[in-house]
Each structure stands twice: as structure tokens, then as C-alpha cells.
Image (cartoon, rainbow, N blue to C red; front, side, top):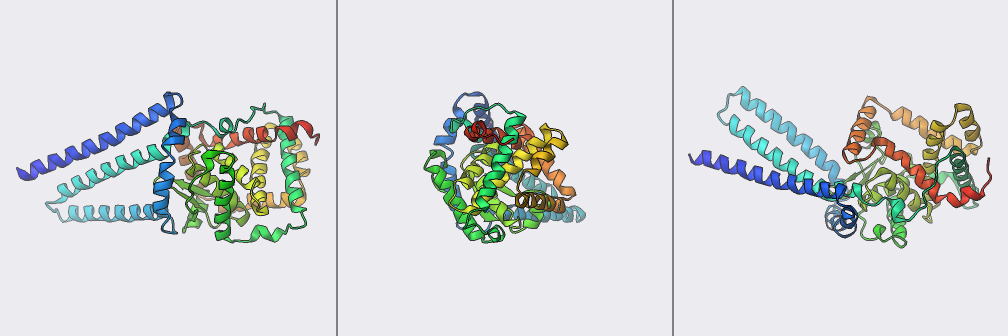
Length: 374
């Protein structure tokens, strides 16, 4: 009788704990989506506590806690499954209790993680976009404006590389310590103009199994559970600055991919580092070229593409070839999962990556209006 009562009590505790976690999560998510102004208020007043407290705690170890957590979960899951199979083969009398304990543990952990995710990530998907925060003008997207933007970005890369202090070998320098420090400094520079970028930044962390990350087509990942900006350390060096700034933008509560991408562009473009400037403008050019390719016939696109300086085209081709080499059967699966994840957070799937072009058009509106590049 005592054992039975103990089990009932544990089930009740499991139910109460998981119910409270899921209830709070549901309320937060519903309020963020349907209570006007709540998400922005939360992002500005409540959310900053998490990077400061959780981020500081997990920054004590230079390696990725998020990656270690995934490995730990995989190992523990394997041990639990094997133990369960062994007990089943031995017809052990404790098999039923073992299953019960594992199930309750799984329910509690899942409910707890859902609550943490809701507080540190889900609500922020509904905050004001960076365009609204920075009061950028809304520009009409047209083929003519898009073509001009591509040429302006290409010209900026040309001017940058024509600088007497420029050396193409800088793009191959794999000094991750410098890149990580400069990425944080670049984000803090933005914080002097926009308060939501100010405050504490934990050190970005490369993923140990970066090869696996690359095979999944992932350049970086933000962990809402440990407040870490993780990145693929095996990437082409000059692509890393933009990627780290992108993940740091997520850490500051800008969860939408187009927002984080545009913030990363601003951080890199305004950095004193020429490599960071190149990384930001280069990524912006990739986005705008991809957008243009879907809007104009192939012949017209090729004419615009040929106007881009040869050194830049060589880099673009190199990055494309690298992506093709790294692509595996798991890449599409990972992209599908990411697409589903974005839609679950009321985002338009991976297409949200393309909305950065609207922000770039708004940022370059003055130059587009006065330049006659076509």
C-alpha cells in the first residue's frame, strides 16, 4: 500500500509540475501573439535578465554547453534504452517501475524545457521587427531597385578591396579569438545607437563537431537554454564574422531570421575591421542576388552578374561550390526541420530569410534613389 501511494504521489507531482510549466508557456505565447504590445514590453523589460544571468553562468566554460547537452542527452537516452531492454530480457520485476520512472522523468524534463524555451525565445518572435525599432522607411520592392542595390553592394566591396590597407590574405586568416572579440565589440557599437543591442554578451563558441554541423547546412545556432551563440568553426574564415553577429543578434532577443541577418549586416558594416565589413556586405550581396535571380529572366540576371567585379564573383563561386561539396542527404532534412520550426513560431518558413532584402532596400534607399548604375 505504501509503495502504491508513493507512486500515485509521484505521478501527481509530475502532473502538477508539467501542467504548470505548459500553462505558463501557453499563456506567454498566446499573450505574445494576441495581446498588443506585450511581446515588445517583454523583450525590453523581462528578457534581458536571461542573457545576463544564464549567459554569464554558461560562459564560465569556453566550450559549448549546448553541444555538450545534446551529446549527454544522446548518451543517457542510449543507456536508458539499453537498460530497459536488458530488464525486459531478464523478465525483471522492476521493469514496470523503471518504465514509470523514465516516463515521469521525460515528461518533467520536456515540460521544463518548453517553459524555458517559451521565456527565452518563443515570445520574442512576436516583438517589434528591427525595421520598426530603427524606424526604417518601407520601400517598394522593384526589379530596378533590386538591380541597383546589387550593383551598389558590389561597388562597396570593390572600394573596400581597393583600399591601400587591404590584403586579400586577410580573408583566409583563421584567428577565431580575434573574430569572436571583434564580433562582440561590433554588436556593442550598435548598442550605442540602439539600446536593445547594449548590455552583456557572452563569448561566442565554435562547435566541436563542426563537420557534422556543416553536413547539415548549418552555419550557426543560438541556444535559448544556455544563452550561447554557437557557430561552425570550419566555415570559410571571412564568413564567420557575419555568422557570429547573426547569432549574437538572436541572443539580444531578435529571433526572426530577417531581423538577425540585417542586424549582423549592420554590425559588420560599421565595424572598424575591414574583414568584418567585407563579410557583412558580401552576405548582403548574396541575399540580393538570390532575390534578383527569382525576379528576372536568366539572361538579364547574367548581365547584372557580369557587372560585379571579377574578384567578388570568384568569391561568390567559391562559396557556392563549398556549399555544394558540403551538402549531404541530411542537409534537406535539417532545412525541413528548420522550416517547420519557423512556421511553429508564426514565421513564414525559411522564406523569412529573404525578407532581409526589404530591410537592405530601406537602408540603402538614399543611395538607390540618387545612383544611376544601370
